[in-house]
Length: 145
Image (tube, rainbow, N blue to C red):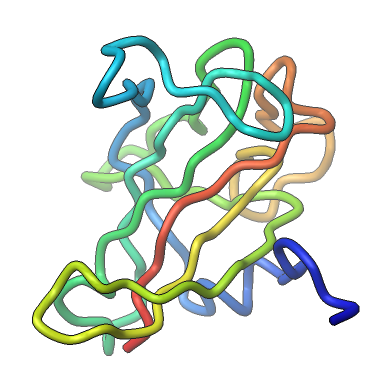
């Protein structure tokens, strides 16, 4: 098959109503208790907790984690006065479907990848890329309805 790996996708296709970041934390490998590393880059993985602003999203679709591979913790956009969450956009996103068989019945879910985090509508100057993530992939998951 000619398609291998993650498929490029626009932020607006994944989050047409926008997204809000709750926080970011380093991911720890369950077995070794050390920072989990990205298989492609060898960089530590950081999970950004995200709430999908889609009013139709329910349950597991409402909250997702987007993982970013970077040497240092990605910087989230500044807080917006009056909002409980930080509006966020992800740069250079890609998606990879997989079968999630952790529940009662298998279902299709999606692993999301991004190469950077930025303020919504921001250009390069307002961008908040992870310092060492210029060529780094990342993954997270978004459930398939």
